[in-house]
Structure formats: structure tokens, C-alpha cells
Image (cartoon, rainbow, N blue to C red; front, side):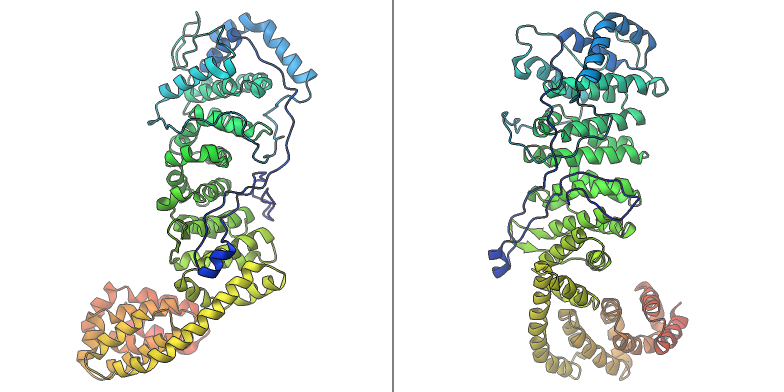
Length: 586
């Protein structure tokens, strides 16, 4: 729906265009290879800013820039007001009263627009290294002098390096955080907004100069990032404005805010919003990626998993960035899965999280899909089941993610162990959701293939349990076919017979890793009661031998047993044998 219209009343409403996860082409579905990721976005409404107020003089901008730098200094304000009283009052009057289309960015008026055609020449691909503010200020100085040739006949030296005097004004000392007057800053920004249509670089420079001069001031950073984000969304100039943000290195300021203001979630939220907004544009995304934005936002997700407003925008930004194959080596999934678990009813987080997890699994350049960790698969399945009737957007994103997962057979086998998934997929398929039908078909075909393979392997496993090195041979087969409940159960039956045959077999089971594989099978098929009982039939005799207890403790066998007991609270037989085993090894 383009705006994340979820049912969560606590989630902040957004108008960001929905960044579609990459799609698998019809050809790729036939041959099992995923296609390239898509960067298609749905657009929102536009606002015509053609009647915004025109350009101002160079001297006006020079003094405004100096005021931004020295914001909060009362002596500087008095000097500024004395020099610009008339022009300032006139401009406020004309911009706020006479012009109904003024870009008033303090109110939340501007929805995100569709990507406009880029008329200007795109910015250079050359990336400036380092994060020093002097480079960014020099970039801004050049843009003031060169933009549209406006000032070629009347150049002005506007060195924005903090502390450098402008014209004849002496630079006062840096204002402390407590001295910053937010009302004056907001008035300044509001007064400059009418010029954003023609001189966005100048307006952005004024805002970011205030931010760089007060880098540790929470309110200045939050407000500045917020206003820059709104400029980046303002149709029909959003593409031009986003390129200007990149050219002035403002995306670096946003990324630095993650570290400088890690104790201020509201600042981090605004920084994530700005990164997401700018990254939507193809012409800007590369430079953002090259500043390690993906890694830095993932760190934000790791450090603030329960900050809902931060996670909404952070995962949204990751969704857009992850669609670019240049992020393949940096896409961690467990932090996002953990955050999704914390906010399972937030439709924005679940929708964008599923899209990110889908992108992270697919390497389109090499036509491969990763084997997905169980805890990640569990989150996607949970999102689908929880929101299948709550949110079509979440259900669509989750089904698409699961469909991409099915290009790896181990993922299909893992999905088959979620017994409550099939019914949900069938319901969605009956409503015409093709991705749900594709997942059902993949599960059906894989089940047929695996059944045929199990019929072939089963006699070999039974034979392996009676021959030379029986423990080793059975364990190897159990590991090779660990996806199969049927073959794992057969292996446990063989090992149960062997453990009661001789002490030598007991030593082999403990010392050669079979015991560890048994407990892992208990976890993998946690809901199967019969398999749990067969596993306890091996573990209990070993626990009764004191010589194996220390090894069982090193393997943390007790934790596996406790998970089994927790999953089968109503099975008296499992409860009794499990508690008896724990008494020996705890």
C-alpha cells in the first residue's frame, strides 16, 4: 500500500514508497535459478512547487550561513537582525502569507512521490573518502558558486569550515548545547524553505552547517535530519534533492549520527529515515552502500532491537539496500529476525523484514539460495501465520520470501517440518496468491523425491547397524540424511540397540560424536514425540554410567532435555524419562 498501513497503533505512520523485493522470473521458476533483484518502487502523490519564492542575493545567504554557524550566540543574533531586519521580515511575509505553495517543511505535508525523470546530469561516481567535515564544506562551497551558473558573474567566498569568518563578521566561540535556541533555528529554516525549489544546495547547506556546528546536540540533529528528509521526499524535485544530499555528503552525517547519538533513539530513527529516503534513488544508492550503510544499520538493529520506531525505519532502509547485489557480503539475518520477533504485530516491520530476509538469502549473481537458519525460517513462517488474515502486504512478502527459499532443497525440507504452515498456504492459495501455490507445489514435489530416496536408503541403514563399526556407520548415515524424520528414527532405533549391547558401543557413542548428533536430532524434530522417546532411550543408559557424565555436561545435554520437556508438557512418558535423565547429569 506504499505506506505500511498496519494494524499496530503504536507504529509511526509512513508514506515511504514500498521497495519491492526482487522477483523470480517465470523462466527462473522453471530452471530453479533466481533472477536479478528488482528496484521497482510504488510512488505516492506529488505536490507542485512551481510557485515557490525565487532566489535571494549572495549577501543574504552569506549572513544566513554565518547565523546558522553561530546559532544561539546572542551577540551574533543582534548583529544579524540589525543587518537583515528589513529583508528578513519582507521575506517571511511574502513566503508565509502570499504564497500558498511555500515549502513549509515543519509540518508533515509532503508524501513520498514516485521517482521523477532525472533532467539534470547525474552526479559523478567518484566517492570522496573519509568523513572530515572540511571536505564536505568545500563541496558545498563549490556548489554555491557553480549551481546553474547563478553566481558566475557575482562570486562570493563562502568558506563553511567551522570557525572561518564570513565577510567581516568575527567567528564567536562554539555555542554550548544549552545555548542553542531551537526556535531561532526553526525560524531560520522556515524562512529559507521557499528558496529550496531553485537553490536546494544552499538550503541544505544552511541546515547541515547548523548540524555540524552542534554535532552532539540531540534536538539540532533530530530537527535537521527531519527537515532534510522532507526535502528528499518533496515532489516533483525529490530526485534532484537526493542527489544534492549526496553531493554535500549529508548521508555521511546521518551515518555518523548512529554512533554519536546511540543513546538517542529519536535521532537514530531520523537518520535511518533519511538514509532510506535517499537510497530509493538508483543514482544515490551506490554512494550510500560504499559508506558501509548496510553494516552500520545492521549494528543499529543489533543495539536497539526493542526500539520500535527505530526498527521500523532501519529495516525499511535495509530492505532497499539489500536489493543491490553489492551488499551481498554484509547481509546478516539473525539481528533482523530477532527484531522481528520483538515486534511480531507491527506490519511494517514484518513486511519489510521478510523482504530483507528474502534478499539476504539469494545470490542472484551466482544463481544460488542459502540454507536458512531455523530461527530465521521460524520468523518468516510466524509472520505469515500471524498476519495471513491481518495484512495482505505481510502475507504477500512472507509468501514471496518462502518461495525464494524453496530454490534450495534443504529449505524445503525445513519448511515441511512446520506442520501448521500447509493449511495457511492452502487458504492463501485459494484466494489467488500464486506464491503460496508455488510453495505448496515445491513441498509436494520434494516430499515425493525424498520418499523415494528414503525407500532406497532405509535397508542400508538397517544393515549398517549390524556390521563392523556399526556406531560410526549409523551415525554417518544419520548426519547425511538429517532432513529425514523417517531415516533419523531408524538410526535412533539402531543406536538404541547398540547402546545396550556392549560398553564398547557406549564409549563409541559418547566419544565419536554420536551423542551430540542425537541431541541435535531431538532439537530438529522437537515436536515428534516418538523421536524424543527414542532419543531418551539412548541418553538415559549413558547418563546412568558415571564415567560419561562429565562429557554429557560438556555437550550441554541438559539444555536439550529441558527443551524437549518444555515442548511436551502433556506427555507423561516424556516428562518421567526426561526428569530421570536430568537427575543423573545435573
